[in-house]
Image (cartoon, rainbow, N blue to C red):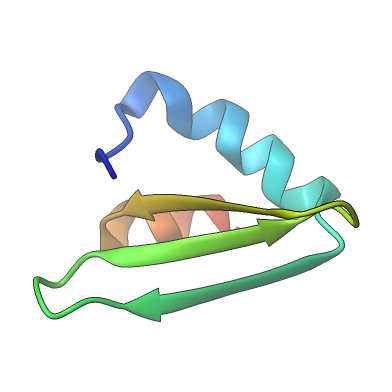
Length: 57
């Protein structure tokens, strides 16, 4: 899974607001897997801590 670019973070932030279920798990390399569920499956994204904090605002 590739890290998201900053250009993709705005779209992901909007998706985060619309997701029915959301969770994040810390990886051993300090990045996070962000899971977004919209009721028909789960999308997974890898972000760093700064990006995760921005998305969750």
